[in-house]
Image (cartoon, rainbow, N blue to C red; front, side, top):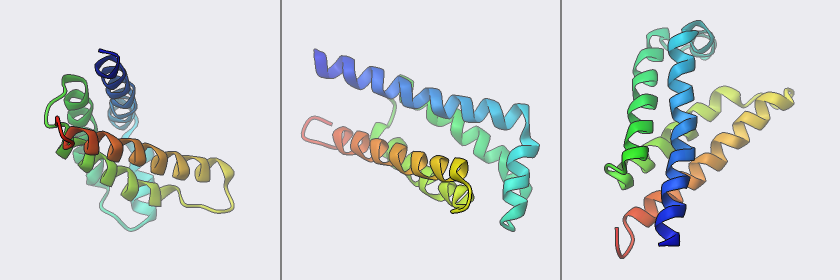
Length: 118
C-alpha cells in the first residue's frame, strides 16, 4: 500500500514539472525560442516540446505506459539540460543539474515500471 501511494505521489510531482513546462512554453514561447535559436535549433521546436511536456505530464498522472514515458522524459531532460550548461552562470548550472536529477528519478521510475511487477 505504501509503495503504491509513494509511486502515485512521486509521479504526480514529476508531472507538475512537465505540466508547468508546457504551460510556460505556451504562455511565453519566445523564451524557449531564444534558447533554441541560440543553439542553432529551429524555433518551431517549441510547439512539439510543449505538446510532449503536456502529454508526458498526463501519462505520468494517469500511469499510462510508465516505462516508455519515463524513459523518453528522462532523455528529454538530458537533451534539454544542454541549453543550460553555462559554467559561468550559477543559476543556469543549477537548472542543468536539476534536469539530470529529474532524469535520474525518471530512470528509477522506468526501472520500477519494467521491474518484476511492472
